[in-house]
Image 1: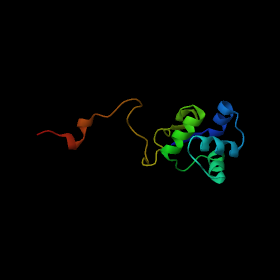
Image 2: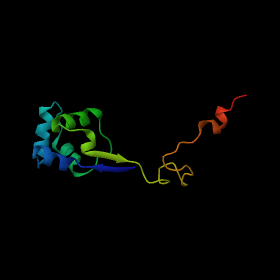
Image 3: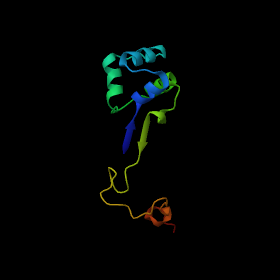
Image 4: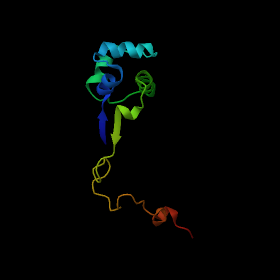
Length: 106
């Protein structure tokens, strides 16, 4: 998966916030107290995981949607975690579910 994390840009554009301590205060105002190292980590690099409550609070504090600062895109065809070979299904088409043995009727 291709992951784009642009929280720092959105903070600057929407709230003119440059420093982690300002984001910390903004989150605290919206009911989510976080330590300064945790807030710095949110700004410096994409998080490994993020709670829904944290995402909602960031969205509420900035007045934006999640996709304004966090974008997830699928990998190019054949480059997913579980696929070692490119798929033989053309883009935009779904396989016929009845071609698989589980759906055979007697």
